[in-house]
Length: 221
Image 1 (cartoon, rainbow, N blue to C red):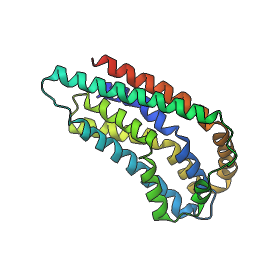
Image 2: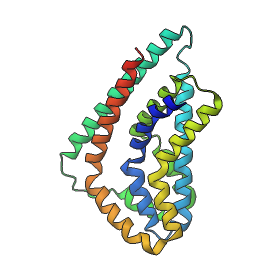
Image 3: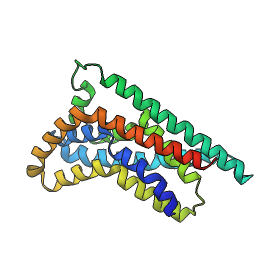
Image 4: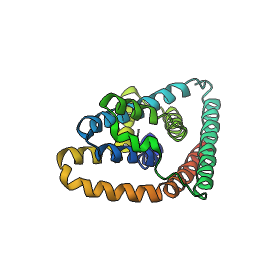
């Protein structure tokens, strides 16, 4: 179990540092709907993370388990493909970051504050199935498939992975629910920082995680 946890922890950190859910969370928490939509968005985000990892782990079991050596090679190749895809995605994001963005904050992000509870839940669920989210979930699922885990061990690892991945959404939501007056200024400052630096942070994280996933894949060959 510890080996599996070590494999997915970097991926969980990459998911936690994803700028889009952070910015949506901040937009919701700075809106009049924060009491209803904030917790709903958090629940949707947590459910989406766990669901995506479980689905990709189940899909990874399409890889034949017998003979074991060939199964490990297939998992290794799949991890390498996912890792390279993350690196390519990082390069694409970096190239886009080099171009000026005259539009500023996207309209859909500005509108996040007007979402109702069910809309916030649905958006959070859907955000887990963006290209970056799918690649990270695929990497986590393949990493878990490569380990010989019992159902209990798998459940524990998925819970820890989900908790870490959702932490950057959970902490602001919980803080805002308990101390709204003191968190507003922090949320505004955080929104400005993330807006200015999100692409370079995303690029560095995806390059690092892509390299880690490729290395994990090579270890299975």
